[in-house]
Amino acid sequence: MKVGELVKGTVEEIVFGGYGILRADGKIVFVDRVLPGEQVEVLITKVKKKYCFGKLNKVVKASKHRIKPKCRYFDECGGCDFQHVVYKEQLRLKVNAAIAVLRKIGKVTVNDYQVYPSDEVWGYRIRTRFHLEKIGSKVKVGFFKKGTRDLVPVSECPIADEQINLALKKIERRLLLESISCNFVDVLAWKGQLSVYPPIGDLSYQELEIDVGEFRYIVNPRVFFQVNKFLLNTLIKLVVGKIKGDNALDLYAGVGFFSLPLARRFKEVVAVEGDKTAYWYLKKNSKLFPNLTAIHKDVDSYLTTITSPYEVVVVDPPRTGLNKTARKHLCEIVARSLIYVSCNPSTLARDLFELSSVFDIESVTFVDLFPHTYHLESIVVLVPRFYSKL
Ligand SMILES: C[S@@+](CC[C@H](N)C(=O)[O-])C[C@H]1O[C@@H](n2cnc3c(N)ncnc32)[C@H](O)[C@@H]1O
Image 1 (cartoon, protein in one colour):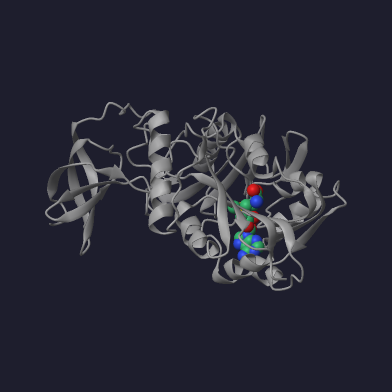
Image 2: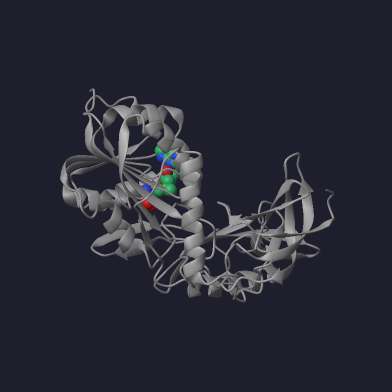
C-alpha cells in the first residue's frame, strides 16, 4: 500500500480518538469522519508497518446516523470529530470507545455506568485558544488541523460561546490593522463578558467572575477552567454532591472548582495546585472558606509529605494523567474513596490498571463536556480494598 492510493472497505468500529477502522490489503486503516458499517473510499495519507492513515474520499454507502456537519470548516479543522453524526449516536460511539480503552489498557470491565449528555451541543465552550499565523502578507486566526500544527483559518466556531465568536470577528479585523507578536490568543467568555489574552484592540484582559450555583470563581483566560457552561453544576454535583466528612484532599485543584464545594461538605480541605497563576486564583477563591488550605506545590512532592491518610481524595490531572509517583502514593493515602476525574480515557486506563491492585471501582460516570469532539470526561469512584497502611 502506498501514499496516494485509493482503497475501499467497510468501517468496523470507531476507536478512541474518533478514528474509524477498516481493513485493506491486510492492514488496518485509520480514517476520520466515518461511521461503523459505512462503505467508504479512502485516500491513503501515511503508511506504517502494520497500519495506515487515510482521508475519506467518498462515502459509498452511508450510515443512517450520518448528517450534514453544521460547521463549514469541519472537513479540515482539528477541533471537532463527530459533527457528521447525530448527537445521540456520537455520544454512544464515544462511550463505547472509552469502555474499550479501559478494557484494553486498564484491564477494567465496565458493565454499569452512567452517561450525562450536554444539555446544549452548540455554543457550549466558554474558553478557547485561537492560533495565529502569518499567511502571505496577512495574519490569520484559527485552529490546527488534527494531529498537525497546520493552521485552518476560521471566521466562526459553532461549538464556542456567542461572545467568543464576536471576539473572533474583532480579532480578525484587528489583525488586518496591526501585526501581533504572539502566536495564540486565549479567550474566556461568561454571561456577556469577555477576557482576552493578550489584549487586542478593545478586547481587554481582565478577571471574570464565574458563578456556579452558590460558588463564585474568579479566573482569567490563562488558567484552566472547565469549558462546558451547560455542565458546570452537574460536574460539581457528580464529583462532590454526595460525600461529606472530616477531611478531603483536592489534587490538581486549578482555581478551586472542586475545592470550594468540598469545603462546604468537609471540616478540613487541602487543595494542591502546581501552576503559579492558577494557585493565585485558588487562594483568592478560597478566601471565604477558612477550612480550605491552598498549597502551591507539585502533586508528587506534596504526596511525599503526607503522614496520615485523607478520607476522600479527588484527583483531576491534565491529559497526561497521574505519574508513577502519584499512583504509588495514592495507593497508600486514601482511607474512604478516591474520586478520579479524567479528560483522557487512555491515561485513565493506564492509571486504573495500577490503582486496581489496591482499589475496587465503585462507579463509572461519563460526562460529555465536549460534544462533537472525541474527548470525553470520566468520573471513576474507587474504594480501597483494605484500610490505609498509614
Ligand atoms: C484538568 S485541570 C483541573 C483543575 C480543576 N480540578 C478544575 O476542575 O478546574 C488540571 C490542573 O492540574 C494542574 N497541574 C498539572 N500538573 C500538575 C502537577 N504535577 N502538580 C500540581 N498541579 C498540576 C494544572 O495547572 C491544572 O490547573
